[in-house]
Length: 513
Image 1 (cartoon, rainbow, N blue to C red):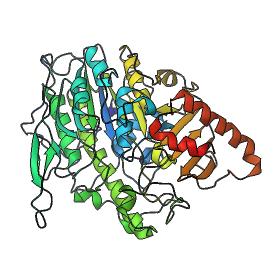
Image 2: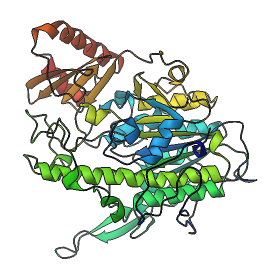
Image 3: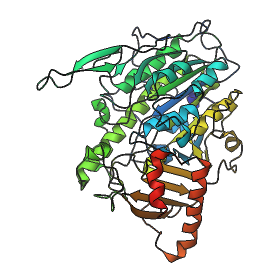
Image 4: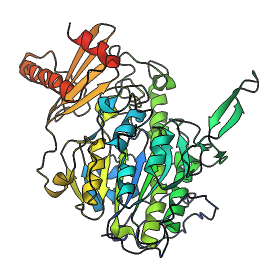
């Protein structure tokens, strides 16, 4: 079943050129009649729209999108008609997580884990690169005969990108920048990506010159529009029956939270509700108060947090709107029924929850992410409770496409859970943040341990009764047994996942005292 079978009833404002995914549209799609330089492999020739033996794949990957930011999954304050339709035609993994991060830029190790299928302490360093011995998802699909296309944010080094993709455009090698002026590269078949552009750091005060890693910039084009336009051009230009994998890696909704004004106007900060776990400040020192936490003063002013939430939602709705245009082209080119769609976020974001702004913690608002799959071989309108890490996407797509899983991959295929709602991929989940926090959760409870400058704090939450992690049970005698069991599991998983690197040793030194 394709998107044409699902109607989207939410209407975007007239000021937004929106094409409905389903049925007839009362507005035509925004023109993409630009000479986009889409790098292609020579194998992509022939007639468009032919069925392929293996499924095509389009992977939408957002930046800083928390798990509870989709209307169809219970958030009535946000407008996400495209994602709602994807929920209707696919399977939602409601317990999709990342393992955390070993640096403040959590998105970097998260993306390394996703693209390598490896666990947090077995990627190279913090994910600045993916070494050749760690086969990437794009590499595995490329070896199996796929045309692999990558656009948007790539935070794991040019060499790993070059190994992964046979084509691409508008490639951003970095973590964050101005959404309206993205320093990007066109696809370089040599894989060098060596161009640099000079710029003056602060013209009113200094003549100091630095260099951006890019070969061009599109002035005044938002990153979300840029990457979706590029993907649309790829889909229209791809020819023949060679299956393709399109990796569409957004920079949104990562700050600076800017978007076309029409989307901002959809959300009135004065009418935006604060979450129940909003706090003016965190009750104890969690050890890191860097750039993300400085986006707002402490104590957090409620009205300021409402504004941040409204802008966060506006960015997500903008992404949702642009995804609709990409999916419409899949329909128009006759590929929708043979294309697997994956949607996920690289990590969550606090935006005022627990008094925090960023993703540098092991609370669910930081490690719990959306994960939706739809397409051939995937049940429609279903949900799964199996514990899934993003690194499981790699072996899952390989199994769905009958592609061998490389030996370097540690993730577990989610196909058993797709076939059987009762299947349990793993019994517990392990989380870490730098050398400061460690956490573990089972089917109901979650333990978070903190070691900050020798001072320890412990939290225990009942996620069934307290999903917002507001009521700490660690000191209650009735939960002493549960606390002990989870601490034993934390130590067991430390060994399973190799959490013994010198870089993170300060946590375990303090924890063992």
